[in-house]
Amino acid sequence: MTNESKELWAFLEALRNNPTDEASRKVFADWLEEKDEPELAAIQRSFSIKKYEAEQRLRQFAARYADNDYEGMVKGMREGDYTFSDD
Image (tube, rainbow, N blue to C red; front, top):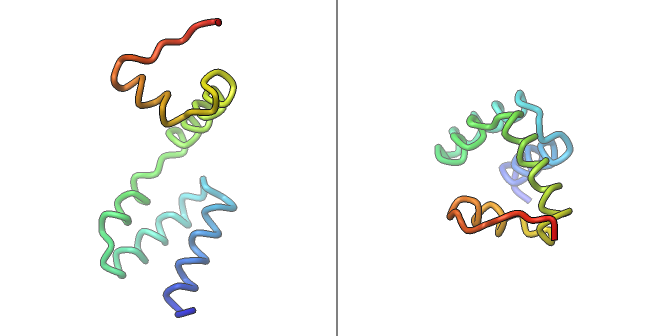
Protein backbone atom coordinates (compact mmCIF):
# COMPACT_ATOMS: atom_id res chain seq x y z
CA MET A 1 0.00 0.00 0.00
CA THR A 2 1.38 3.42 -0.96
CA ASN A 3 1.72 6.29 1.49
CA GLU A 4 -1.03 8.12 -0.38
CA SER A 5 -3.34 5.11 0.00
CA LYS A 6 -2.52 4.87 3.70
CA GLU A 7 -3.30 8.58 4.17
CA LEU A 8 -6.59 8.25 2.30
CA TRP A 9 -7.52 5.19 4.35
CA ALA A 10 -6.73 7.07 7.57
CA PHE A 11 -8.96 10.01 6.56
CA LEU A 12 -11.83 7.72 5.57
CA GLU A 13 -11.52 5.70 8.77
CA ALA A 14 -11.50 8.86 10.89
CA LEU A 15 -14.62 10.18 9.15
CA ARG A 16 -16.36 6.81 9.43
CA ASN A 17 -15.68 6.80 13.17
CA ASN A 18 -16.71 10.44 13.63
CA PRO A 19 -18.68 11.72 10.61
CA THR A 20 -19.42 15.09 12.20
CA ASP A 21 -15.76 16.01 12.83
CA GLU A 22 -15.53 19.21 10.81
CA ALA A 23 -11.83 19.72 11.55
CA SER A 24 -10.94 16.35 10.01
CA ARG A 25 -13.09 17.15 7.00
CA LYS A 26 -11.28 20.46 6.45
CA VAL A 27 -7.88 18.78 6.67
CA PHE A 28 -9.11 16.06 4.31
CA ALA A 29 -10.36 18.74 1.90
CA ASP A 30 -6.93 20.38 1.90
CA TRP A 31 -5.34 16.98 1.27
CA LEU A 32 -7.73 16.35 -1.64
CA GLU A 33 -6.84 19.75 -3.12
CA GLU A 34 -3.16 18.82 -2.95
CA LYS A 35 -4.01 15.59 -4.81
CA ASP A 36 -5.76 17.58 -7.58
CA GLU A 37 -9.27 16.56 -6.53
CA PRO A 38 -11.04 19.94 -6.23
CA GLU A 39 -14.56 18.52 -6.67
CA LEU A 40 -14.11 16.04 -3.83
CA ALA A 41 -12.51 18.76 -1.70
CA ALA A 42 -15.55 20.98 -2.30
CA ILE A 43 -17.85 18.20 -1.11
CA GLN A 44 -15.90 17.92 2.14
CA ARG A 45 -15.92 21.69 2.62
CA SER A 46 -19.67 21.89 2.08
CA PHE A 47 -20.37 19.42 4.89
CA SER A 48 -22.94 20.64 7.39
CA ILE A 49 -23.72 18.99 10.72
CA LYS A 50 -27.34 20.15 10.43
CA LYS A 51 -27.70 18.57 6.97
CA TYR A 52 -26.02 15.38 8.21
CA GLU A 53 -28.37 15.13 11.19
CA ALA A 54 -31.40 15.82 8.99
CA GLU A 55 -30.33 13.06 6.60
CA GLN A 56 -29.92 10.66 9.52
CA ARG A 57 -33.46 11.43 10.70
CA LEU A 58 -34.80 10.88 7.17
CA ARG A 59 -32.95 7.57 6.95
CA GLN A 60 -34.57 6.50 10.23
CA PHE A 61 -37.95 7.55 8.87
CA ALA A 62 -37.33 5.55 5.68
CA ALA A 63 -36.34 2.52 7.71
CA ARG A 64 -39.56 2.72 9.65
CA TYR A 65 -42.09 3.81 7.03
CA ALA A 66 -40.60 3.32 3.54
CA ASP A 67 -39.22 -0.24 3.59
CA ASN A 68 -35.76 1.22 4.25
CA ASP A 69 -35.74 2.76 0.75
CA TYR A 70 -34.19 6.13 1.59
CA GLU A 71 -33.01 6.81 -1.96
CA GLY A 72 -36.40 5.97 -3.46
CA MET A 73 -38.20 8.05 -0.85
CA VAL A 74 -36.02 11.11 -1.53
CA LYS A 75 -36.31 10.67 -5.30
CA GLY A 76 -40.08 10.40 -5.02
CA MET A 77 -40.30 13.51 -2.86
CA ARG A 78 -38.18 15.47 -5.34
CA GLU A 79 -40.32 14.35 -8.26
CA GLY A 80 -43.52 15.03 -6.37
CA ASP A 81 -44.87 11.50 -6.61
CA TYR A 82 -44.16 10.22 -3.11
CA THR A 83 -47.00 10.27 -0.63
CA PHE A 84 -47.18 9.27 2.99
CA SER A 85 -50.05 7.39 4.50
CA ASP A 86 -50.92 5.63 7.73
CA ASP A 87 -51.52 2.32 5.92
